[in-house]
Image (cartoon, rainbow over all chains, first blue to last red; front, side, top):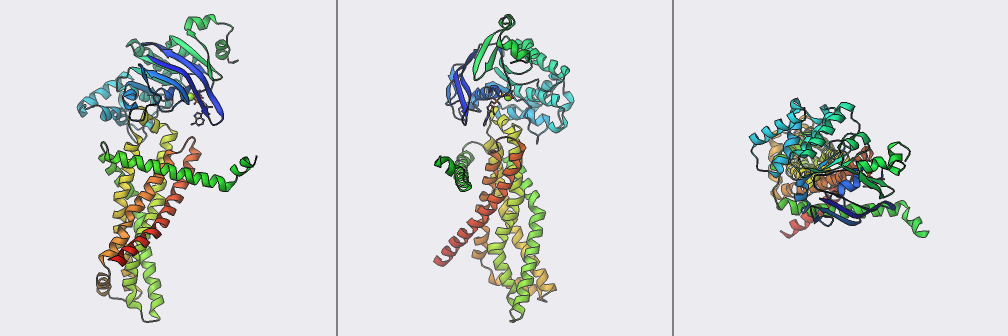
Length: 240
Length: 265
Ligand SMILES: Nc1ncnc2c1ncn2[C@@H]1O[C@H](COP(=O)(O)OP(=O)(O)OP(=O)(O)O)[C@@H](O)[C@H]1O
Ligand SMILES: [Mg+2]
């Protein structure tokens, strides 16, 4: 369970979040949508303590994390995977080294076990030949998939996706959607930040729509469809 | 109104910038000290960085060293020849190289080459969210990125200085032999006779401080890049300028310190 209560944050004199509250139950996938610059990424980053709200509370499985220091956050970060928009792969390392990184840091697995896990994982993501390549030699879509694969190496209970499909062609988009659905089926809880409404409709159970620093609408997919005249509809149609 | 006016003057902004820098460096140094002695150090990454730092600087350092030694030998030789003081060239060149020129010139070269490298590398990692990714996976950028680079500089720079000391004196000897017609055996003998261990260490030991003056600010400027590749360029420039200034300024105080120590002993 992830709970955010009355999240507020300003940058300089610009008040970006004016009290955001939402919660995601176990096994659910929530879409966090809204225009560019409304502060979706900042919220997502705050959920693993990469940024701190000015006030408000964040509960991950009952633990309030906003006052946690970098060291206290390690255990949370092992359980919550963050999928970065551009993949955020380490460009001085090969794909193999990238995937091995979290395992070598946090587990006592032997190199043979790690090797097996990585080749299974790359097979799963349709990238069996990418092992020895450097991120610079991968296409954008492949980088995103490797980023997702790396985030999943530690078998997280929660996943935070920051625009996992932005800038991808339809076939890569579908692949990512399939992965998200497959992960959801295993009981993983997730939050999906996106502009890509077809993907949001395909994988989310419910959505929260941010407008002007607040949650302007939240509800299940059905509720969104029924809210025909509402603000979400305007956003989807490009009028909001 | 008046406040707003003061707040926009270049001097005010400059002072704020300086205060921020020393505050930031203070915090970073404290964290470095704490984390280096707490928990594991990534020795594999340290070795990798030592190779990088050494490799990156070696040609530059060798060329600087040999030409400095040669030019000093030449100028001293020409200058002193008039007074029949040519024989003092080995002594003068070796003392100046060991005490000041060796450590300072090497450090300036390393500040330019390695400092710029650190700042731009780390800055790009910030921009491409790699630093965030390190944190997001529950690991520490300090331990994986900064500490290996600081230790590597701390180890490599003194080695490079030691190399400079030899190469520079060799340059002096070359010119001494070819231009000043000094016997190489005499030249070497003269160095060995006049140079004391104190001369050597008062220069060599400084390089450990210079290493910190280069590595810590350069990593700091890289880490404080916020957004955009333009800032990476700015961070790189700042890293080179600031670490060079720190090397020069701290050199004065260190020389003074060693001078006091020598008076006492
Ligand atoms: N470190 C920062 N310093 C200053 N302003 C910031 C910082 N981080 C975010 N902002 C501001 O906060 C606002 C929200 O940023 P955020 O990245 O969360 O937007 P977003 O909703 O994810 O947008 P997008 O869909 O374009 O990714 C933006 O206006 C941005 O300028
Ligand atoms: Mg964003």
